[in-house]
Amino acid sequence: MVRGPSSSFDANGVKKGAWSEEEDQKLVSFIQTHGHPNWRKLPKLAGLARCGKSCRLRWMNYLRPNLKCGNYTAQEEEIILKLHEQHGNKWSLIAEKLPGRTDNHIKNLWHSQLKRRSRDREKSSSSEVKGKKSGRQNNMTKYSSEADTVKVVNGLSNILESSSPEFMETTTSTLASQDNYSPSLTTSTLASQDNYSPSSPSIDTESTPTKNSPEEYNSGALRKEVYKFQEFSGDF
Image (cartoon, rainbow, N blue to C red; front, side, top):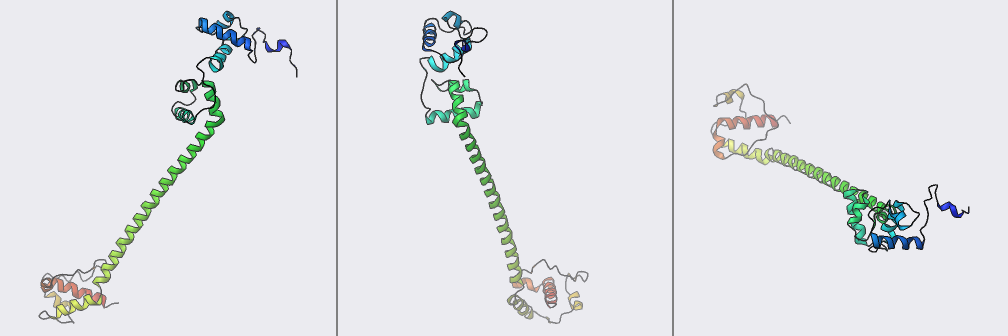
């Protein structure tokens, strides 16, 4: 579709579309002489059939002398990524930290390249955090299971050690050396010993006998315990 010469002007007579070199020269010469105190009044004073917003964007993004053109460096891209994490889509605030770069160019760069890179970084960081948490949980479970296993093994070893034939033979031989010892010791005989209570003939299967010194075997209470253990072990 071919447009006529009047198609670049709206109903109010304001020109739209691409800027010509003549318009650029008028805008630059006026700003260099008078500055830009008021963008709304500037087009009429400069002799331009443009709106104030179009003049401001043309100057800030293309015509100002300290404008930095070209590709962005890796350092500039990292600065934009960090500032975007802090301030979000405040492009003017981000542009203040990058001399020579415009907010419009930074916004275009973000949506064309950096936005996808930021998402990839977030995904990788979240996956790393999940991996660390799962590794810690696995380690804690492993350590707790190992500790429980060690406790069970130690308990079983103590029981087996206390109930071994060697321990029984040692206990029997020690008691045999005592006076008035009879293998067929009955409850009536034990009743004559000190501190014996016939109301507690049961034995705690969870507790294990402990090895005591030879002097402790002389006491009647320890002989009763050994007899109870022999009587209990004879049922198996």
